[in-house]
Image (tube, rainbow, N blue to C red; front, side, top):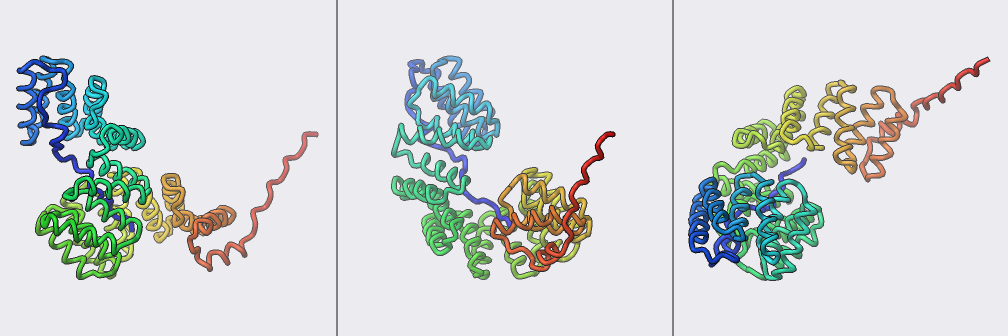
Amino acid sequence: MQRALCILTVLTIITMGLVTGSAFGAPAKDAKYYNNVGLDLFKKGKYDQAISNFSQAIRLNPKDALAYHNRGYSYLNKGDFNKALADFSKAIEINPKFAMAYTNRSLAYLSKKENDKALADLNKAIELNPKLDIAYNYRGSIYILKKEYDKGIADFSKAIELNPKFVLARNNLGYSYYLKGDQDKAIAEFDKAVKQTPKFVAAYNNRGLAYIDKKEYDKAFADLNKAIELDPRCYTCYNKRGLIYYEKKDYDKAIAQYNKATQLDPRYSIAWNNRGLAYFHKKSYSRAIADYNKAIQTDPDYANAYNNRGMAYLASKAYKKAIPDFTKAIQLNPQLAEAYNNRAHAYAQEKAFDKAKTDADKAQELNFSVDKELLADLQKAPAKAPAKAPDKKK
């Protein structure tokens, strides 16, 4: 079952980037005044008003790199990534050694899924300021997204070395160990995180996930309950409680938890997918399909949801609908062995034995244990007759 990625790349207020003394190249007192007013408004979450003040600072001093940076950061928090990119780029043009502008521009690129550009910016930020702990944290997050876990661990460890109180990096280090499959090391880091910050919801949430993998469900429940106590709107926590019930095959209780997760965040595709799985195991295939539809609607690139919907169609004997779903899953994730296996079953039901055998072979190549009965049936299946050559014109 696919689970949520909990790496924290939270857009926190970066004091180092937002609050400084005089603006770069700005002798004008009024520009500094508007910049400071904008900072105060930003901290209160009044982004539009902050943007207005930063814009006034820029009008008074068009060479104010800090004002461009801070306006870009406000746009970033509003989700206007293109305007954020433009402002961060202008700040860098004015001051090419502005490490925080590279760091925060990386977040805009990351939000647009331009991970390679984000990585390049973070490399530059670290080159300019090798002690910039937050840049290591963000770069580590990108490495985790790229599944380069050892590089991520090295960066999070460096961030903590530079700033031992950097609890976000500590959480991310724990999550990196979790993704590598070293649950004991992951739990040790989450332990440190909650000891350092007892109200750190994400650390309880992630430690709960590690306990789920160790099948220590009571400890997992305790952590997830604590996270929900601290943040009743923690929709990922409800999803994880659903995972516990799912693992216990208590599908009705799992569904109740997924219901809560989707109520709190209707765009949480993983919870829709997971509820679909619970309905699938209850043989409520139409409900499962409806949930997979919702998962795909909220995340059109969700390969597992296509594969799972295909399975529901397969179980419903709607083979012609199942095959396109497995094909889409494979297009999105060519390493998804289950999809090749499942499509092989669907092709076999449609008597497309050559295609079924090709898929079964591919699934085995990807180290998937294909059903022996299917393999035996494919061995017995008649080979496709060779195409008859057309008659020559006389």
